[in-house]
Image 1: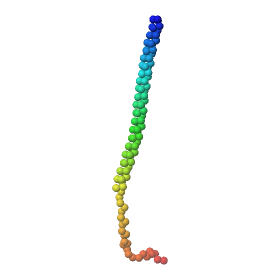
Image 2 (image 1 turned 30 degrees about the vertical axis):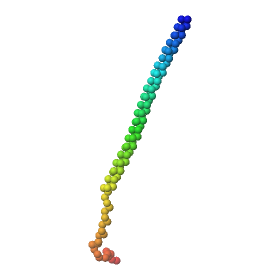
Image 3 (image 1 turned 180 degrees about the vertical axis):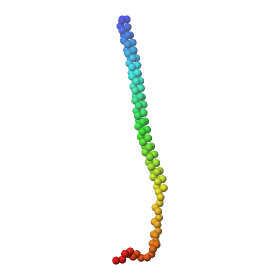
Image 4 (image 1 turned 45 degrees about the horizontal axis):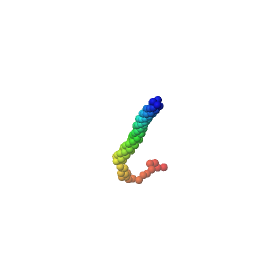
Length: 104
């Protein structure tokens, strides 16, 4: 009888130890998975941040360039000279009629 109780007690203790080891492994696995997921999320956030910053930089540069070109074109149109007035016709100095130089 002692032998059966001892074997039964050993089986129960073995099951508890095995259950405790399984929970430790699953907990350890869960922790490692959580660490890897967090590291992956951080990498992806960094990649997305870089892409967004590059796009924003491109947009800002385009806007600044357009604004600068607009300012330059406005400033040049203000400096452009006006068309000069048409001069008055010059009257001939000699009022004689024109004759041929050589007669035949």
